[in-house]
Image (cartoon, rainbow, N blue to C red; front, side):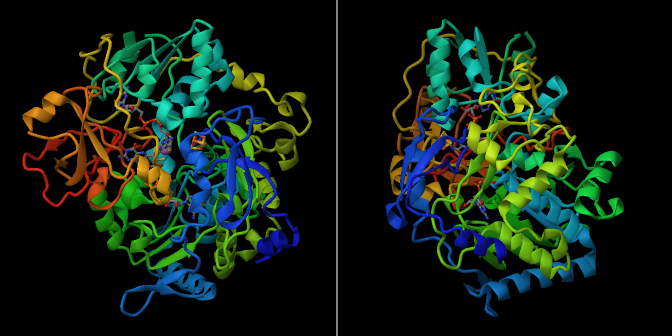
Length: 627
Ligand SMILES: Nc1nc2c(c(=O)[nH]1)N[C@H]1C(S)=C(S)[C@@H](COP(=O)(O)OP(=O)(O)OC[C@H]3O[C@@H](n4cnc5c(=O)[nH]c(N)nc54)[C@H](O)[C@@H]3O)O[C@H]1N2
Ligand SMILES: Nc1nc2c(c(=O)[nH]1)N[C@H]1C(S)=C(S)[C@@H](COP(=O)(O)OP(=O)(O)OC[C@H]3O[C@@H](n4cnc5c(=O)[nH]c(N)nc54)[C@H](O)[C@@H]3O)O[C@H]1N2
Ligand code: SF4
Ligand SMILES: [Mo]
């Protein structure tokens, strides 16, 4: 449709170097991408002030996913035998629109649900939220950010009055006398961030880590509290400092700022606030009464699938919930009970395998838009490569579906920039005000920090974080609350010198549900299967051998891993990553109990049993969770 045509007419010189950003985590390293086809090359962008040229291995190898042979290049739909077969775009979009209409007629608008992702650009996040409220008129839209940092966000709002991934600019790390990090392993999850801690160390500052594991980040710390998982509240109540907890997926921040979250409208406005509803309705040109109220949160939405009063038809865009949601066996059962599932992805993810219709989406280098990094810096994703024939941008998909649902007039954009301008207007006056941000301003200043209510005020056009970002850097920590008071005293806290971490680079190689990184040869070589990190005494008690199989079990399921015997873990704790599917999925084990305030599942910690007889059919290992 028109956006596609316009991009082609712009006659971009594909292959020339383009400054853009890594597709993965919220650090959003600046990269330079050049070349075409299988010869696309990536280099760190030394001019971008966040990573200053540094990248992790995932960034260096990100181009491999663009030309990967597994790439979806045509829509797929079930044939009469239930097999996914290639179909044309018209047929795929018609099937989706007719399923959504049928569900709406039979069960009402809230029976159609949307599950979005923090990896979507701000423009897509905004449009998906508007699509839910205007085209589908459903309350039920939520996204993977609820699995990521919504507890940290809730804590920030209560302690600071503002939710921003990091409540201070990265450059302020270097000047801090002491920093306490609880439940964060930046050396493996955002390695280029470590340069700021090195600067802090050189200036005489101290780093304190609270983590049950002796991680590479803890190895760099002056003090390591090796606490029992879930006891952070007890630790945080004796300590005063500048702690940090959680700053997530790519633009998870933008996702909730612009309406993918069940309780929010663009600009981080509450959907139950009458003034906010009135204002956003006026921007959208719809009656205020037509905007639905708050919907249910991500796990509640998945739990409702196919149930009476629940969601019957679901669209998933930018998430692989079968691998990443807690209590995965149950989630698969619920998905199978749906009347209709459509998944948009680059690859046939574990979730897409269960879909009635699969849509092939453009990847990061083949689209344009904006993202918001962990500092609240709004940056540009630039179009750098031609997308494969047959692949569409999610934006085109949303607009074409809206048109089939009779609401095309509300989704008539000439280009992505028009969507961003409308997003800015819809956010104006809200806590996350983007109205003073333009693509041109971002390009001229290496990103613009929100809130940015003014097009011209000098504070909103400079490269350094403005005062409103910098002033919020000292705050007390509010720990997330879980229903069954778990807080115990952090006995076992230690200052012993600990042995070095073995060089298996546990978590560095893989990203999230692994759909992308499990397909990249260098990353698979670094970590071909999930390792369960187990203390030598625990391993001895259960007769486990290093490198051998181990099966872990909870009331919700069991999963297979490879044993990694290590003194870096507490004797009473096992750590597993969550980047694999099938019998290697950590989330088969995890507990979906929700934090009553943020509705984030408490799945990062659960009680687990080692099955005494290791699973014979476990060729590799399997494993879980960050724990
Ligand atoms: N390589 C890689 N990098 C990533 C990602 C990825 O998948 N792979 N994902 C990105 C995303 S979306 C996110 S949200 C971030 C997450 O990155 P981080 O915030 O660094 O978080 P995690 O790796 O989830 O967990 C960090 C540490 O918390 C410890 N921990 C577990 N339970 C507790 C507890 O109860 N108390 C304390 N104090 N510590 C605990 C774990 O041992 C672990 O070392 O990383 C981003 N970067
Ligand atoms: N046990 C356990 N579970 C966890 C966590 C944990 O620490 N432990 N961490 C949680 C956290 S922090 C997070 S953020 C979630 C993440 O988990 P997910 O929500 O599953 O996130 P991704 O793996 O990034 O999934 C994104 C999917 O969308 C596709 N995709 C990426 N970008 C786009 C796009 O622009 N358009 C479309 N159509 N598709 C796209 C990718 O190929 C991938 O299949 O997992 C959570 N689950
Ligand atoms: S730290 Fe994050 S943004 Fe930077 S290269 Fe690695 S995955 Fe990409
Ligand atoms: Mo995340």
